[in-house]
Image 1 (tube, rainbow, N blue to C red):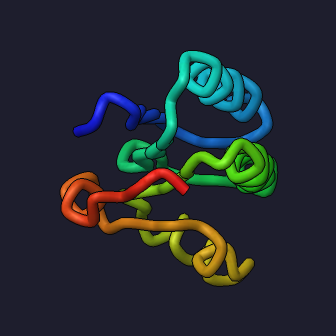
Image 2: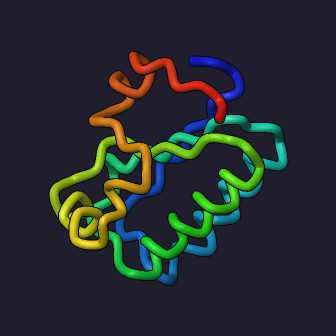
Length: 108
């Protein structure tokens, strides 16, 4: 994987109690020069509206910096939430990390 790609692997439930910590970890990666942020959701069991809102805020921020924000390994619950809110059309979502790497994602 390119050195400008940084992977974040949140775990458990992404809700209001974890959202701020998650946002701060992504902000640190951006401050350290990450061009592409890949959020691997394989260990996330549930995302509520706060968690989804945090993902949207990060997406807007990262796009504003002309960088790339991608998601991978979403479970059925998260996929359903994304489809119901049409976020599946907003985010770049890959089946898993291998699919992301195979796509050779470029910086925006």
